[in-house]
Length: 354
Image (cartoon, rainbow, N blue to C red; front, side):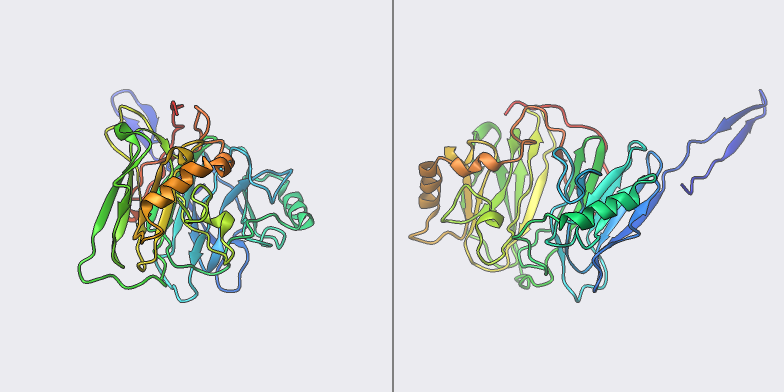
């Protein structure tokens, strides 16, 4: 699509050389003021093309589904996660990039409550099946996360992550929440090592941070997450326990080889001094004490949080994604890149020993 071919005549042998086809970047707008749709709702793309999703107002996702089940996530598919954008944002919108690796159809929907059934679906190379895909979505009533807020929420992380699933690479850049507190005059970045030679721990396991500070989780060997939870339910994602619609943050699984020298990172911004509780949702890790806290205050100390996680034995952690609970991780978050240097990374991460 929009490819340029350049021919060069070799004078010495009069042979014709063809410079490889250049890939195209195809922009797709996600949502917008009063818009519950992807615009356009389908594209035709060649191998190597990049579909760039531009997230606008409200809180949407790009979640891979199937033609048969338009409003349900594909078991081994990709998912950007919820990307909230406030109504007053006018530029520097969050981006996600999907690299097309073959010409097979790719089916996508928004898993915000009700959006899929209202027609918020998208496809790459749908052939003659786009109308059927839309009709099936409308007929389902749309499955979505009931805990997702329809508006931008505080505590949104600033992170660019690349996900490679089933041969498609998806790079998502999340913008900081416009509602976040102003940075202090001199903010600090707190680096926390996740896993590695220290074992099933975050190092350090508890920190004190000021509004405007950032916490950067640096993932070392094995396959871990940094998932927000609550003091009451240490080993369950906040999105599944909150009664006020909080979605919480979740790095997703970060598989890292034992011989790696470069480590993926995930950064959150501190908006206030409210305690933040974090756990690893890899099977059994939370029950083994792999927890972390920011601004823990007695009697809800870090030690009490960790003890509760061990006491509960992480039994609720059985809902962890199969991507992270098996040796083969086809849906792996690869090293984070800055927004300025964002690029899709192609390749399937090799299986790692848990």
